[in-house]
Every structure is written in C-alpha cells, then in structure tokens.
Length: 129
Image (cartoon, rainbow, N blue to C red; front, side):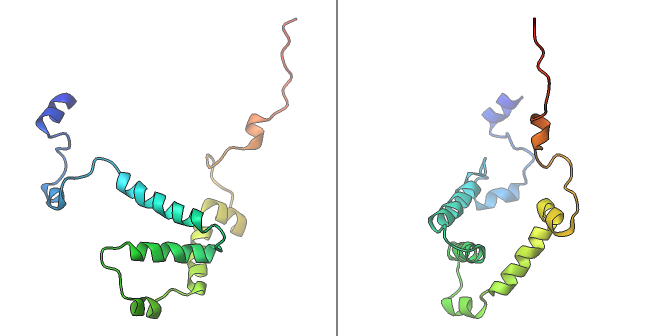
C-alpha cells in the first residue's frame, strides 16, 4: 500500500489541500533544525555572555531573521528589560522539574534521570570454582 501511494504521489492523503498554497509541504523538520543550529552556533561563538545577555542575543537574532524586522527606533522603545527577562526565566525555571525540586523541594517524577545507585551497587561476584 505504501509503495502504491508513493507511486501515485499521495503518501500524505490526510493533509488539507490548503497546506499546499504556500508550496510543497516539507517532509522533515530540517528547516527548524537548521535555525536551531544557527542559534546554538551564535551562542557558542559568544560563550562569555551572561545568561540574560544570551537570552537577549537570541531575541535579537530571531528578530533580525524575521521576514519584516522592526526599525531600530521600535527596538529601542520596546526593548525587554533585564529585570523582565530575569522574571520570565525564573518563572520558567520554577516550572521545570529540576527547578521545582530546588526551589520548592518538590521531588522530581520517576523516569527523569538515571540514579547513580541504579548501576553502582555493591554485589558479590559469583565465582565458578
């Protein structure tokens, strides 16, 4: 069935025809990964930045790579302040499993990581003699 659908050019028959108005639908998320790789590369090149500056650099980079970026005057008037970024980051941190544990003492759910003791226990070796 899959081979027949590929030959007919109808592999994704469940998609709306409206998706095709902007061109063919990409079959992978490579475009997204490409943008993520560029962001990671930018942060790698500027390793010495504090966390708040890294967040601002990501915001600036995303703004500069939009289809229609705003003017410099608009950026100056609407720039996000360091205090607001710190507040947003704190809120995001408190919602993460590690942040909930460190901030409120809420234990993390099972399955979020590997415990050292799961693999490093004292066991007597069986000898074959």
